[in-house]
Image (tube, rainbow, N blue to C red):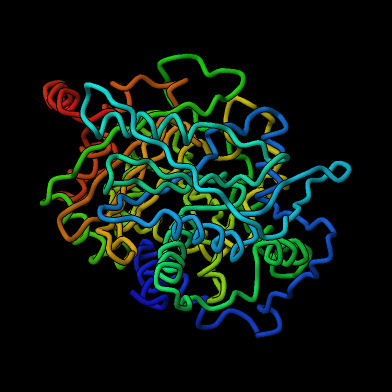
Length: 496
């Protein structure tokens, strides 16, 4: 697969509402001089961090930057793997992407980033331990233990690739990095680039990767330089107006909220019935919105039912890559966007859906302002036991695209287990096709038991089933499961 093909696949993997936002912004947003990002001199001077990086640095300094912010992606490789070529390709990858050679330090009260010169990166190979359990279970246990090792942002670049050897011709290649230098899109870019660099090393030919003009530090400096622009002031005014008076979401929990978030988490999953998924898509078409908007509206209804509040805010994410040259870069681009709705239980769900549609469009029109600047401006009450402004997130992802090709190898995407939670609850829907929609709930184990998480997923599925078949139902009458239905779902639920 060529680099343009990989880029198109990555855009296609975005939820429909984000694809449309990206197309609109790439087609028209601003003049060339406004949009062109300048490069910084690389003269050994410490480089600025982005506002999002600053937040993660500060959390780390407060002792809250553990494995919760570790990201990992993996490929299962079957066939004769040349580990020497792979090691050389990893070194080439760190040469290409400065963030993989970056450490962080304090310059007075503010963090800065320092980029090391390119150099060899040893490939660590781990043999899968023998044991009595299934290979998958032993592999996942090893992966979980490795990806939960915290990074020291001051001492070494927060990038840790390694290779697990199952057998002579079966390996799992893992790239693990701290969120301060990466995001989900970036992990895909790194794996795509690594596959191409491996091909180049194996064959001795040039890689098909274009030389990057920019690095993430350039983007961070450009972002900070725009903070006082009229456009950013308009975005800030919107968020100050929209989020004024927002109170924390008080979800019913199984245990009291700890004074300090640990970031410990787990997941559970369920698949929606095909007829429900079809009904949700039909509802979206009839109301001129996306499937994502329907999911947000249904989730906000459930949260209103749980909390007894009509004022419901849910977080989501924007890619932060509204310029073509940012699409092939690694870095922390993703931005949190808040969707705040007033849930009126007297109105039909369809009317509420139309309101949520407007909310989503307005919010993404103002996605450029970094979430951390929104938090700074609104100054919510400081509480180390919860995330600021939003305590729950909902995202819709396309199903995993094709794995990158590597010569002589059968390559498959491998899902890395996760034992952390960034929010109280994160709902991730995976769009697997016209009739396939999987719901995965990531939950903070400090707050919720596995049974509660499975029940929450089941309740959301019930609300979605109701709006798929009878979208004109009043919000107050949308059903949760009866006792028998809940018992069946909990018995069948998958907990990880």
